[in-house]
Length: 170
Image (tube, rainbow, N blue to C red; front, side):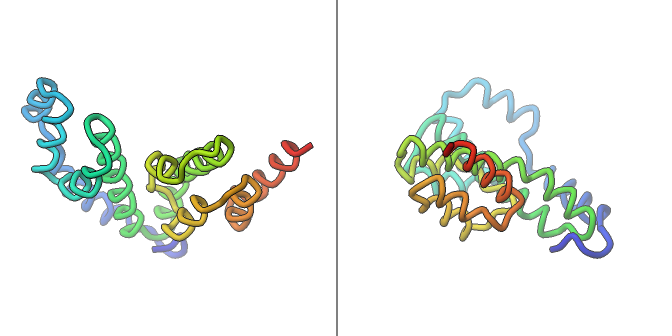
């Protein structure tokens, strides 16, 4: 939606509370504490995390699969909340989610600096912020820190990154 207009907290709260019913209960948590990573992944595959587990299962296993599936599901939940939100509520939620954008910027810069494989960097991203897939893809394709700064020049991170990069270059 957008940060312009009146907000709709009642609607968003009702939607979030409805989704709360799909969370694991006490009994399920007790079961999970007695399982190993492979069993937990299998358990998650039979729940609301099935799409994430199936999408990531061929590339990851064990604890990594669980972590990446949880992060991907978290990102999709936050995207849905942003889609439902309007007005000042959208602005507040977007401001909170910018911490994930900051995480992703730092992860990409570290990946470029260490010349890490693009797929390794991508797997560490948490796509829960305001950056769309196109911007994330452009960040991942950046081959220098200067290119990362250029991709972000029209965001709130642009000016601070340009200043920090100029200082770094000195």
